[in-house]
Image 1 (cartoon, rainbow, N blue to C red):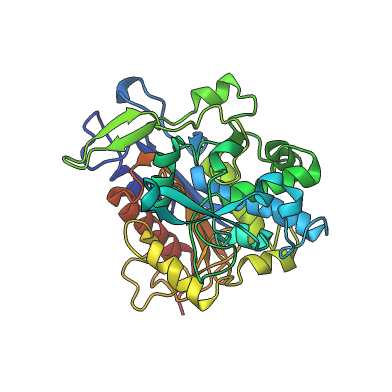
Image 2 (image 1 turned 120 degrees about the vertical axis):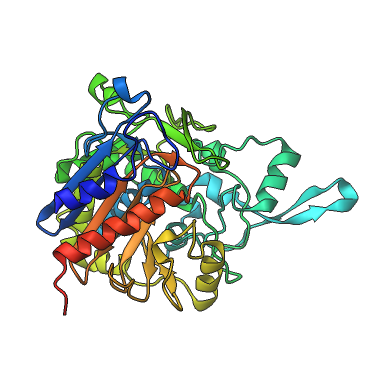
Length: 405
């Protein structure tokens, strides 16, 4: 099976320095509750090919929003230990949340000054984990972009500082039937820090990474060894005109984050991220109880919120997992999105999934008992080469490991 996966990867990665419609490299691991079923990788971590290390399942890449699953599990541990509840108002725990305001438009009679309204609604852990708290990302919300321009606020909303996350709400928490992808899970991580007295990274090392034998996955605010630097994957950018790649850096801070970002801060490897997926398949695997894992797989959105979610993240470049599925239905669990119908030849209804802005992806299918993770590092998000390759890899995994009726 590894040969089949490797063949798919090799057909999509560079063989020389010609990058047209190719990727620098990628790694894919598919697991069941007992551990890895197959692991494959191909390509390189940088250019030129002649001097670049091979891309392997141990190559370290910025996983961006794939951090959200790890932060969600960490916060749910506190709920399980009764240090938090999913539906308590956490504003008293975090001063910035208590002061949050709602952006209600702009006053054209005052040069377009933002209209800000005090928030009087509770902000809960459930809302923060499901993107129903009103915290958005500026690149999805035109009003936040306009607010930032008016106030002279730099776009650091993924920039891993509390100041960079402290933007207005785009709707009242839990209300207005809306869903907005944003920094809610970053704030959930801040709640964890206030409850535990530890940084999010320190907490994860002791309560998630350590128990699962994860040694290399790191927030960039942690000390990073020379070995990890040597295994680091360089980020590539696709030219929309000719499909070629150039190697560069993100226009936002991803090395040297000021604060451990529960929404986007983790660097990880395919082989280590897969350990988390194994734990989820095992009903928590010693890091979380089965009842809390069951809650992760429950649809959390109201009907109105689910409609809003699908409008912001429809099947297509932004949600490639669901492309080609007729009458597709999606909802959001705790830690990721849920497909409510089978994906033919791939995962079953009720599977949990998410991705990162650099096009890495993961899924967990509890019905069939398999999960997978793809690590790549290419922008922009929704890369067509990655999207097709990911669907091909998942289909190959199901063909090999899922018994057909």
